[in-house]
Length: 389
Ligand SMILES: Cc1ncc(COP(=O)(O)O)c(C=O)c1O
Image (cartoon, rainbow, N blue to C red):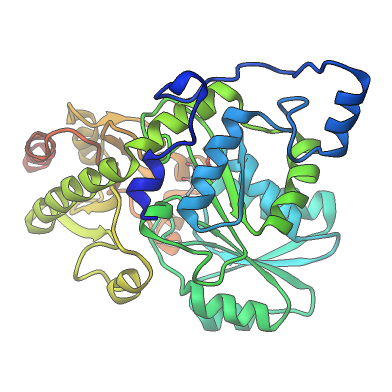
Protein backbone atom coordinates (compact mmCIF):
# COMPACT_ATOMS: atom_id res chain seq x y z
CA UNK A 1 0.00 0.00 0.00
CA UNK A 2 1.28 3.50 -0.81
CA UNK A 3 2.06 6.11 1.86
CA UNK A 4 -0.94 8.43 1.33
CA UNK A 5 -3.34 5.51 1.66
CA UNK A 6 -1.80 3.82 4.67
CA UNK A 7 -1.70 7.11 6.59
CA UNK A 8 -5.43 7.58 6.02
CA UNK A 9 -6.67 4.02 6.43
CA UNK A 10 -7.49 2.87 9.99
CA UNK A 11 -8.70 -0.40 11.42
CA UNK A 12 -12.43 -0.22 12.22
CA UNK A 13 -12.91 1.80 15.42
CA UNK A 14 -15.74 1.18 17.97
CA UNK A 15 -19.13 2.47 16.68
CA UNK A 16 -17.55 3.01 13.28
CA UNK A 17 -16.02 6.27 14.56
CA UNK A 18 -14.05 8.06 11.84
CA UNK A 19 -11.41 9.19 14.34
CA UNK A 20 -9.55 6.80 16.65
CA UNK A 21 -10.54 6.71 20.31
CA UNK A 22 -8.26 8.54 22.76
CA UNK A 23 -7.43 6.05 25.52
CA UNK A 24 -6.53 8.77 28.03
CA UNK A 25 -5.86 6.37 30.86
CA UNK A 26 -2.86 5.39 32.98
CA UNK A 27 -4.02 1.88 33.79
CA UNK A 28 -6.33 -0.91 32.52
CA UNK A 29 -8.66 -3.00 34.74
CA UNK A 30 -9.28 -6.78 34.55
CA UNK A 31 -12.24 -9.00 35.54
CA UNK A 32 -10.29 -11.49 37.61
CA UNK A 33 -6.97 -12.78 38.94
CA UNK A 34 -6.78 -15.13 35.95
CA UNK A 35 -7.35 -12.30 33.47
CA UNK A 36 -4.63 -10.00 34.85
CA UNK A 37 -2.33 -13.00 35.26
CA UNK A 38 -2.83 -13.87 31.57
CA UNK A 39 -2.20 -10.22 30.63
CA UNK A 40 1.22 -10.37 32.31
CA UNK A 41 1.99 -13.53 30.33
CA UNK A 42 1.21 -11.58 27.14
CA UNK A 43 2.88 -8.28 28.08
CA UNK A 44 3.50 -7.17 24.52
CA UNK A 45 -0.09 -7.64 23.38
CA UNK A 46 -2.35 -6.65 26.30
CA UNK A 47 -2.40 -3.13 27.78
CA UNK A 48 -1.80 -3.24 31.54
CA UNK A 49 -0.28 0.20 32.20
CA UNK A 50 0.27 3.06 29.72
CA UNK A 51 4.05 3.26 30.19
CA UNK A 52 4.10 -0.29 28.80
CA UNK A 53 1.31 -0.22 26.19
CA UNK A 54 -1.50 2.16 25.30
CA UNK A 55 -3.80 1.43 22.33
CA UNK A 56 -3.81 5.03 21.04
CA UNK A 57 -0.01 5.18 21.15
CA UNK A 58 0.16 1.71 19.61
CA UNK A 59 -2.00 2.75 16.64
CA UNK A 60 0.34 5.70 15.96
CA UNK A 61 3.35 3.36 16.27
CA UNK A 62 1.89 0.91 13.75
CA UNK A 63 1.21 3.70 11.23
CA UNK A 64 4.75 5.05 11.53
CA UNK A 65 6.23 1.57 11.24
CA UNK A 66 4.24 0.95 8.04
CA UNK A 67 5.34 4.32 6.65
CA UNK A 68 9.05 3.69 7.35
CA UNK A 69 8.81 0.03 6.19
CA UNK A 70 9.91 -1.00 9.69
CA UNK A 71 8.75 -4.11 11.52
CA UNK A 72 8.07 -2.09 14.64
CA UNK A 73 8.14 1.40 16.20
CA UNK A 74 8.26 2.89 19.68
CA UNK A 75 7.09 6.41 20.44
CA UNK A 76 8.83 8.53 23.07
CA UNK A 77 8.13 11.79 24.89
CA UNK A 78 10.71 13.69 22.78
CA UNK A 79 13.15 13.21 19.93
CA UNK A 80 16.04 13.23 22.41
CA UNK A 81 14.37 10.43 24.42
CA UNK A 82 14.18 8.40 21.20
CA UNK A 83 17.80 9.21 20.24
CA UNK A 84 19.25 8.39 23.67
CA UNK A 85 17.22 5.14 23.80
CA UNK A 86 18.45 4.06 20.35
CA UNK A 87 22.08 4.84 21.20
CA UNK A 88 21.97 3.14 24.61
CA UNK A 89 20.41 0.07 22.96
CA UNK A 90 23.39 -0.21 20.59
CA UNK A 91 26.35 0.35 22.93
CA UNK A 92 27.73 -1.06 26.18
CA UNK A 93 30.46 0.00 28.60
CA UNK A 94 33.68 1.00 26.84
CA UNK A 95 32.33 0.85 23.28
CA UNK A 96 33.08 3.46 20.62
CA UNK A 97 30.71 5.47 18.38
CA UNK A 98 31.45 7.34 15.15
CA UNK A 99 29.17 10.24 14.24
CA UNK A 100 29.26 13.46 12.22
CA UNK A 101 30.74 16.77 13.39
CA UNK A 102 27.55 18.72 12.83
CA UNK A 103 25.16 16.26 14.47
CA UNK A 104 22.21 17.82 16.35
CA UNK A 105 23.66 19.67 19.41
CA UNK A 106 22.05 17.76 22.32
CA UNK A 107 22.79 14.42 20.57
CA UNK A 108 26.43 15.57 20.27
CA UNK A 109 26.49 16.48 23.98
CA UNK A 110 24.98 13.11 24.89
CA UNK A 111 27.75 11.31 23.00
CA UNK A 112 30.62 13.70 23.83
CA UNK A 113 29.93 14.34 27.53
CA UNK A 114 27.23 12.20 29.11
CA UNK A 115 28.20 8.77 27.73
CA UNK A 116 31.96 8.93 28.53
CA UNK A 117 31.27 10.05 32.10
CA UNK A 118 28.57 7.47 32.82
CA UNK A 119 29.52 4.51 30.65
CA UNK A 120 33.05 4.98 29.29
CA UNK A 121 31.58 5.00 25.76
CA UNK A 122 33.62 7.38 23.60
CA UNK A 123 32.73 9.04 20.29
CA UNK A 124 34.70 10.24 17.28
CA UNK A 125 33.20 13.14 15.31
CA UNK A 126 34.01 13.04 11.57
CA UNK A 127 33.15 15.09 8.49
CA UNK A 128 30.80 12.50 6.94
CA UNK A 129 32.39 10.85 3.87
CA UNK A 130 32.60 7.05 3.84
CA UNK A 131 36.40 7.25 4.17
CA UNK A 132 36.08 9.37 7.32
CA UNK A 133 34.23 6.53 9.06
CA UNK A 134 36.81 4.03 7.87
CA UNK A 135 39.61 6.28 9.16
CA UNK A 136 38.07 6.71 12.63
CA UNK A 137 37.30 2.99 13.05
CA UNK A 138 38.63 1.20 16.16
CA UNK A 139 38.19 -2.38 17.38
CA UNK A 140 35.75 -0.95 19.96
CA UNK A 141 33.47 0.69 17.36
CA UNK A 142 29.93 -0.66 17.79
CA UNK A 143 27.76 2.17 16.42
CA UNK A 144 27.69 4.61 13.53
CA UNK A 145 25.25 7.43 14.23
CA UNK A 146 24.17 9.45 11.17
CA UNK A 147 21.97 12.49 10.61
CA UNK A 148 21.28 12.88 6.90
CA UNK A 149 20.66 15.63 5.97
CA UNK A 150 21.92 17.27 9.13
CA UNK A 151 19.78 20.06 10.51
CA UNK A 152 22.66 22.50 11.08
CA UNK A 153 24.66 22.60 7.83
CA UNK A 154 22.56 20.13 5.75
CA UNK A 155 25.40 17.70 5.04
CA UNK A 156 24.41 14.27 3.69
CA UNK A 157 26.03 10.91 4.35
CA UNK A 158 25.92 7.94 1.98
CA UNK A 159 23.66 5.73 4.11
CA UNK A 160 23.97 2.62 1.95
CA UNK A 161 27.78 2.67 1.68
CA UNK A 162 28.31 3.53 5.36
CA UNK A 163 25.86 0.79 6.45
CA UNK A 164 27.72 -1.75 4.31
CA UNK A 165 31.03 -0.74 5.91
CA UNK A 166 29.59 -0.85 9.45
CA UNK A 167 27.85 -4.21 8.99
CA UNK A 168 30.94 -5.82 7.52
CA UNK A 169 32.67 -4.90 10.80
CA UNK A 170 29.85 -5.95 13.11
CA UNK A 171 28.60 -2.45 14.07
CA UNK A 172 25.07 -1.04 14.03
CA UNK A 173 23.81 2.04 12.14
CA UNK A 174 21.30 4.57 13.48
CA UNK A 175 20.04 7.41 11.26
CA UNK A 176 18.27 10.57 12.42
CA UNK A 177 15.80 10.99 9.54
CA UNK A 178 13.94 14.00 10.94
CA UNK A 179 14.74 16.35 8.05
CA UNK A 180 13.56 14.11 5.22
CA UNK A 181 10.78 12.26 7.12
CA UNK A 182 9.96 8.60 6.34
CA UNK A 183 7.92 9.86 3.36
CA UNK A 184 10.92 11.23 1.46
CA UNK A 185 13.66 8.89 2.74
CA UNK A 186 13.46 5.20 3.70
CA UNK A 187 16.69 4.69 5.64
CA UNK A 188 15.99 1.09 6.72
CA UNK A 189 15.72 0.03 3.08
CA UNK A 190 19.17 1.59 2.58
CA UNK A 191 20.66 -0.57 5.32
CA UNK A 192 20.22 1.38 8.58
CA UNK A 193 19.39 -0.76 11.64
CA UNK A 194 17.39 1.90 13.45
CA UNK A 195 15.78 5.14 12.29
CA UNK A 196 15.06 7.92 14.80
CA UNK A 197 12.99 11.10 14.53
CA UNK A 198 12.08 14.16 16.41
CA UNK A 199 8.33 13.79 15.78
CA UNK A 200 8.07 17.37 17.10
CA UNK A 201 8.88 18.47 13.53
CA UNK A 202 7.00 17.37 10.35
CA UNK A 203 5.41 14.22 11.78
CA UNK A 204 3.33 16.23 14.26
CA UNK A 205 3.71 19.30 12.10
CA UNK A 206 1.68 21.93 13.98
CA UNK A 207 4.27 23.27 16.48
CA UNK A 208 2.19 21.90 19.35
CA UNK A 209 3.78 18.55 20.34
CA UNK A 210 7.23 17.42 21.52
CA UNK A 211 7.71 13.73 20.62
CA UNK A 212 10.10 11.16 19.19
CA UNK A 213 10.14 7.73 17.59
CA UNK A 214 12.56 4.83 17.04
CA UNK A 215 11.89 2.44 14.15
CA UNK A 216 13.50 -0.90 13.37
CA UNK A 217 13.28 -4.68 13.49
CA UNK A 218 10.88 -6.42 15.89
CA UNK A 219 13.86 -7.90 17.74
CA UNK A 220 15.54 -4.52 18.33
CA UNK A 221 12.29 -2.75 19.13
CA UNK A 222 11.11 -5.43 21.60
CA UNK A 223 14.41 -5.00 23.46
CA UNK A 224 14.14 -1.18 23.39
CA UNK A 225 10.52 -1.36 24.62
CA UNK A 226 11.35 -3.37 27.75
CA UNK A 227 14.73 -1.75 28.46
CA UNK A 228 15.24 1.90 27.43
CA UNK A 229 11.49 2.34 26.87
CA UNK A 230 10.00 1.04 30.10
CA UNK A 231 12.98 1.51 32.42
CA UNK A 232 13.97 5.04 31.42
CA UNK A 233 10.26 5.58 30.99
CA UNK A 234 10.06 8.48 28.51
CA UNK A 235 6.99 7.00 26.77
CA UNK A 236 4.74 9.15 24.63
CA UNK A 237 1.46 10.14 26.34
CA UNK A 238 -1.89 9.12 24.77
CA UNK A 239 -3.06 12.65 23.94
CA UNK A 240 0.20 13.39 22.11
CA UNK A 241 -0.29 10.14 20.16
CA UNK A 242 -3.83 11.20 19.26
CA UNK A 243 -2.54 14.54 17.97
CA UNK A 244 0.16 12.67 16.04
CA UNK A 245 -2.45 10.36 14.46
CA UNK A 246 -4.42 13.42 13.41
CA UNK A 247 -1.28 15.01 11.95
CA UNK A 248 -0.24 11.89 10.03
CA UNK A 249 -3.45 12.04 7.96
CA UNK A 250 -2.17 15.25 6.33
CA UNK A 251 1.55 14.46 6.37
CA UNK A 252 2.00 13.84 2.64
CA UNK A 253 -0.24 16.78 1.70
CA UNK A 254 1.66 19.08 4.07
CA UNK A 255 5.01 17.88 2.77
CA UNK A 256 3.96 18.54 -0.83
CA UNK A 257 3.11 22.11 0.15
CA UNK A 258 6.26 22.59 2.27
CA UNK A 259 8.29 21.37 -0.70
CA UNK A 260 6.54 23.61 -3.24
CA UNK A 261 6.69 26.69 -0.97
CA UNK A 262 10.37 26.08 -0.24
CA UNK A 263 11.23 25.73 -3.93
CA UNK A 264 9.71 29.20 -4.51
CA UNK A 265 11.50 30.75 -1.52
CA UNK A 266 14.85 29.17 -2.48
CA UNK A 267 14.47 30.39 -6.06
CA UNK A 268 13.94 33.93 -4.75
CA UNK A 269 16.93 33.73 -2.36
CA UNK A 270 19.14 32.22 -5.07
CA UNK A 271 18.63 35.26 -7.30
CA UNK A 272 18.94 37.88 -4.53
CA UNK A 273 22.25 39.81 -4.42
CA UNK A 274 22.04 40.11 -0.62
CA UNK A 275 22.50 36.34 -0.21
CA UNK A 276 25.98 34.79 -0.57
CA UNK A 277 25.26 31.10 0.16
CA UNK A 278 22.25 28.75 0.33
CA UNK A 279 22.35 25.42 2.12
CA UNK A 280 19.44 23.36 0.78
CA UNK A 281 19.78 19.76 -0.47
CA UNK A 282 16.96 20.36 -2.97
CA UNK A 283 18.91 23.04 -4.82
CA UNK A 284 20.17 21.77 -8.21
CA UNK A 285 23.56 23.41 -7.60
CA UNK A 286 23.92 21.92 -4.10
CA UNK A 287 27.34 20.19 -3.79
CA UNK A 288 25.68 16.91 -2.73
CA UNK A 289 22.71 17.20 -5.11
CA UNK A 290 23.39 13.79 -6.71
CA UNK A 291 23.48 11.96 -3.40
CA UNK A 292 20.40 13.91 -2.26
CA UNK A 293 18.45 12.74 -5.31
CA UNK A 294 19.66 9.17 -4.90
CA UNK A 295 18.65 8.95 -1.23
CA UNK A 296 15.52 11.11 -1.08
CA UNK A 297 12.38 11.35 -3.17
CA UNK A 298 11.58 14.88 -2.00
CA UNK A 299 12.83 17.83 0.03
CA UNK A 300 11.34 19.51 3.08
CA UNK A 301 11.32 23.13 4.23
CA UNK A 302 14.30 23.68 6.53
CA UNK A 303 17.27 25.51 5.01
CA UNK A 304 19.97 28.02 5.78
CA UNK A 305 21.28 30.99 3.86
CA UNK A 306 24.09 33.47 4.44
CA UNK A 307 23.56 37.21 4.33
CA UNK A 308 26.25 38.95 2.29
CA UNK A 309 27.33 40.85 5.40
CA UNK A 310 29.13 39.85 8.57
CA UNK A 311 28.08 43.03 10.36
CA UNK A 312 26.17 41.84 13.42
CA UNK A 313 24.03 44.99 13.68
CA UNK A 314 22.84 44.53 10.06
CA UNK A 315 22.12 40.83 10.63
CA UNK A 316 20.07 41.68 13.72
CA UNK A 317 18.19 44.37 11.76
CA UNK A 318 17.28 41.82 9.06
CA UNK A 319 16.24 39.25 11.69
CA UNK A 320 14.04 41.68 13.61
CA UNK A 321 12.45 43.12 10.45
CA UNK A 322 10.73 39.83 9.51
CA UNK A 323 7.00 40.02 10.09
CA UNK A 324 5.60 36.60 9.08
CA UNK A 325 8.56 34.39 10.05
CA UNK A 326 8.36 33.86 13.79
CA UNK A 327 11.69 34.15 15.63
CA UNK A 328 11.85 30.72 17.30
CA UNK A 329 13.82 27.47 17.56
CA UNK A 330 12.42 24.20 16.18
CA UNK A 331 11.03 23.66 12.67
CA UNK A 332 8.73 21.49 10.55
CA UNK A 333 5.46 23.08 11.65
CA UNK A 334 2.69 24.85 9.74
CA UNK A 335 4.24 28.20 10.64
CA UNK A 336 7.34 29.73 9.09
CA UNK A 337 10.14 30.21 11.61
CA UNK A 338 13.51 31.95 11.55
CA UNK A 339 16.59 31.38 13.68
CA UNK A 340 20.21 32.53 13.61
CA UNK A 341 22.69 29.75 14.59
CA UNK A 342 25.11 32.47 15.83
CA UNK A 343 22.71 33.09 18.75
CA UNK A 344 23.39 29.66 20.32
CA UNK A 345 26.94 29.25 19.01
CA UNK A 346 27.93 32.55 20.61
CA UNK A 347 26.90 31.15 24.00
CA UNK A 348 29.52 28.40 23.67
CA UNK A 349 32.20 29.71 21.29
CA UNK A 350 33.88 33.05 20.50
CA UNK A 351 32.89 34.44 17.05
CA UNK A 352 36.51 33.89 15.83
CA UNK A 353 35.84 30.13 15.96
CA UNK A 354 32.66 30.29 13.84
CA UNK A 355 34.52 29.86 10.53
CA UNK A 356 36.16 26.57 11.54
CA UNK A 357 32.71 25.34 12.61
CA UNK A 358 31.34 26.20 9.16
CA UNK A 359 29.06 29.00 10.32
CA UNK A 360 29.07 32.75 9.88
CA UNK A 361 27.47 35.58 11.85
CA UNK A 362 25.31 36.17 8.76
CA UNK A 363 23.86 32.63 8.67
CA UNK A 364 20.09 32.49 8.92
CA UNK A 365 18.03 29.29 9.25
CA UNK A 366 14.42 29.28 8.12
CA UNK A 367 11.67 26.70 8.31
CA UNK A 368 9.27 27.36 5.45
CA UNK A 369 5.69 26.82 6.56
CA UNK A 370 2.35 26.48 4.83
CA UNK A 371 1.56 30.18 4.27
CA UNK A 372 1.22 31.67 0.79
CA UNK A 373 4.75 31.60 -0.71
CA UNK A 374 4.32 35.09 -2.20
CA UNK A 375 3.78 36.52 1.30
CA UNK A 376 6.87 34.69 2.57
CA UNK A 377 8.96 36.05 -0.32
CA UNK A 378 7.62 39.59 0.24
CA UNK A 379 8.51 39.31 3.92
CA UNK A 380 12.07 38.17 3.17
CA UNK A 381 12.40 40.85 0.49
CA UNK A 382 11.41 43.71 2.78
CA UNK A 383 13.71 42.41 5.56
CA UNK A 384 16.59 42.09 3.05
CA UNK A 385 16.01 45.67 1.97
CA UNK A 386 17.07 46.81 5.48
CA UNK A 387 20.61 45.63 4.59
CA UNK A 388 20.87 48.39 1.96
CA UNK A 389 20.79 51.13 4.59
C1 LIG B 1 17.60 16.84 13.73
C2 LIG B 1 17.01 16.79 15.10
N1 LIG B 1 17.02 15.63 15.75
C3 LIG B 1 16.51 15.54 16.99
C4 LIG B 1 15.97 16.62 17.63
C5 LIG B 1 15.47 16.47 19.04
O1 LIG B 1 14.10 16.37 19.08
P1 LIG B 1 13.20 16.87 20.32
O2 LIG B 1 13.35 18.37 20.38
O3 LIG B 1 11.84 16.41 19.94
O4 LIG B 1 13.72 16.21 21.54
C6 LIG B 1 15.89 17.85 16.99
C7 LIG B 1 15.27 19.02 17.63
O5 LIG B 1 15.38 20.14 17.21
C8 LIG B 1 16.46 17.94 15.68
O6 LIG B 1 16.48 19.12 15.02
